[in-house]
Amino acid sequence: MKVPRIIRKSPLYQAIRKTSWGKQYLIRTGKLVPREELIQVHAEGTALRLDSSIKVKPVVGIVYPEELSTGYVFPKASAYLYERYCKTNSVEYQNYDIHASDWLDKAKKFDIIFWHVDSTPPALYEAESKIYILEKILKKTCFPSYHEIWQYEDKCRAYYLYEVYNLPCIPTLSSNSRKESIKLSETINYPVIVKTRTGAGSFGVKKIDNKAQLRRHIKKVFSSKGTHTLYPYERQKDYILLQEFIDDASYDLRVMLVGDKAYGYYRYPNKGDFRASGEGNEDHSRPTPIDVLREAISVREALGARVLGVDFLYSAKYKQHLIIEASIFNEIDPPSIETKLGGVPGFYDISDPNNIHYQEGAFWFPELVAESIIKQWIIQNTQQTSPTTNF
Image 1 (tube, rainbow, N blue to C red):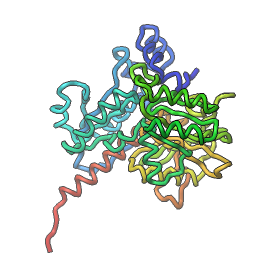
Image 2: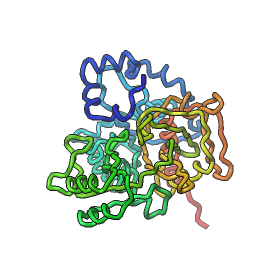
Image 3: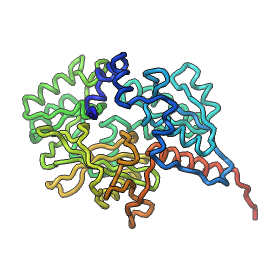
Image 4: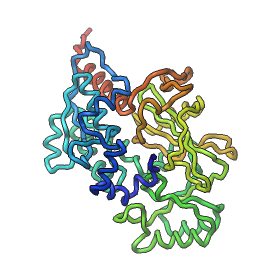
């Protein structure tokens, strides 16, 4: 049985995982596997290979997740798939302990740094602080980049970008003014959705049915202590994020893009739940509309993200697919089910947006990420080292 994401992202579930009982459960259900079994698990996806003529290759630093049980790992963790790509292509790589006090000194040896950042507030603070130094000052290639991590798991920042680039998002209002928020409570239509800036698996998403409920929420948010969030150490304070309640959407559609490939699948809410995301009711066999794939490409270009997952919902009222949110990190499924049309695993070839088509191929998404970032580094550094001719 698949544990819904809304539960898996909760601090309580994360704490239970670290108990002896939790570790045994993860091992028994195959969520954790012995490290030596990674080869068999990852064999489900076709290995990606660089051109054998390439001579200039980077030194890669990989930030690995904590091992909950010694010798056991999460096989779908991005770090181990970045590792497989490096091994396959004889790219030098090392474990980069970015959390240690000597992280700056260790960074000197790397050209590229891969770091799948957790979505918790302290992890995001650390990542923003360190990636800024690594990329902007030390000139390292990082995934995510500072620009990408700045907008990751922050719904207010994401909304600012949607607004400035005129992207088709759900109608939203964001304010840091208590006075204005009170006025908004008088004029908006109900019900309305309120969200916390950071959350996961639909945590921090709440439906407000009337003005009295919203006024109470505003009073808490703008109080001296703020109000509670998913994270017991983090409070929502001095900001309000309101979204129109779209009552004619029966699903949301996730599109994930990397390089010239895209994947898409549908997610459906449980009966009586207005939230589609996080519940694990997924359909990977239903075709993704070409116009939605093109819209996702436009979103990726506007946000300046090399890798992006975009969640859409279709509203008959607005007669279009609207952005719920976009993220550089998404839950990874095995290649056999990521997208599977007609029983055939594959992807959408988006190399030509005017001729998008489905193509057979089973690849691990994080390996495609590694390929995209490393190839781009090789292209840039090959151009820099190529001899020039003066005429």
